[in-house]
View 1 (cartoon, rainbow, N blue to C red):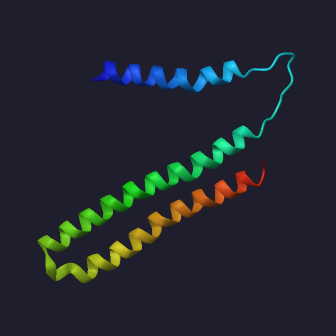
View 2: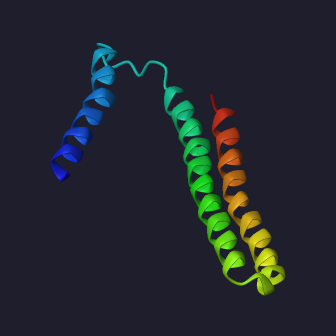
Amino acid sequence: MTRHLGKLALYTLCFVLLPLAAFAQEGGRSGDSSWGYALGAGLAIGLAGLGCGIGQGLTAGNTTAGIARNPGAAGAMFTNFILGMVLIESISIYGLVIAFMLQGKI
């Protein structure tokens, strides 16, 4: 299994670095440097959305399982569930703000 992950990491690294070498410019000119901001903005919102989706899925699943086991505690669990969802969603909003800030630099 680790052998396959090593190959996957190597291939991913090659696919990321080969275009950079192919489009390298001669003479030391810096060229267009805004691609880093665009990449950062995309990664900010993408990773924030991914992390929040995983967190919300785990929270909703565990809350549903807890309510199914103890229906009498549904009110207290639901309050904590809503508070947890709000805090998880705030992480996604931070990612969106960072993406907009980086988008403004392009």
